[in-house]
Length: 367
Ligand code: UT7
Image (cartoon, rainbow, N blue to C red):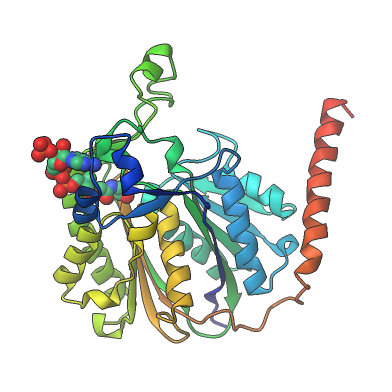
């Protein structure tokens, strides 16, 4: 019996604080006009002090689980893609989210593919579900990029924003769902977009802090050139892999890095720009979160409906790029397991928190 992988729930977490281009013009030498015309961005969200990729990611995941009718306890796999994880190496942000969800014993790990991370996560989760290893997964893109940009560097600080998005993936015998995916990389471009210090190559020191080497460095022009080639190529490739043509595609949901990059991709593919979802004006570049954030809006605006074929396409540091082709089915699959009323989740999540505290206490007491 063929096994398909459907996206049965989606959710987002959007920090409340809005930072406009005019706000930025007060701290760096820039203007609303420059940012709007060069990137399409008008404003972005910035996380509060107590918000991290793990807290935003948990919020988005809970919303997605609720929509899918899947209890957090039933989650089998948590994959987090983040370019600004809670901790630099370990533990994985996915483990923090697994714990907050109370997804006891679920497999949880992070993937590092920068802005392409959500595409890599979807492809990987779909493959693991298709082989029968898992019946479900939560894939999360979560960022607080505001913590890793240099707020004195106008080349980068105007571009990024914070937020999170999550998809729930479930196995089904009904055709549809994630039909094809492609993933690529070219590490020769590693230094076109990177964060130089804090890793094993350049451990943190007074000097690295003084030189702000713990913040994003980017060769914007080169990344732009790469992106305008990589995006259309990945769309074309994934469509061919699924045995379809561009005519079969209702919507493209691209990584939101720059309005001009998306317009160039549309021109290159000879597809009308109306078939590309864009919300970069209100969120900026939220890296791994940008595709689920744009998807959430496309569904709400009824631009993406059950039966539609949608291509998710991304690119980013690494260099990495990739795409997934999905037949959108909406959260209408019969749940494979019994539904639980979400109001009970509150108590379940409190219990998960108590369990965590209990385990920590036991460890501290050496019991
Ligand atoms: O998720 C992937 C992440 N990154 C990307 O996708 C970035 C891809 N690249 C881009 O989006 C664009 O290259 C940028 C938006 C970063 C820059 O746009 P551009 O049209 O490529 O500008 P540029 O780098 O060629 O710079 C043009 C001028 C420069 O001044 P000079 O050297 O010509 O005097 C910059 O110093 O614009 C200047 N500039 C700014 N001016 C006002 C750069 N940033 C700013 C700014 N405000 N914020």
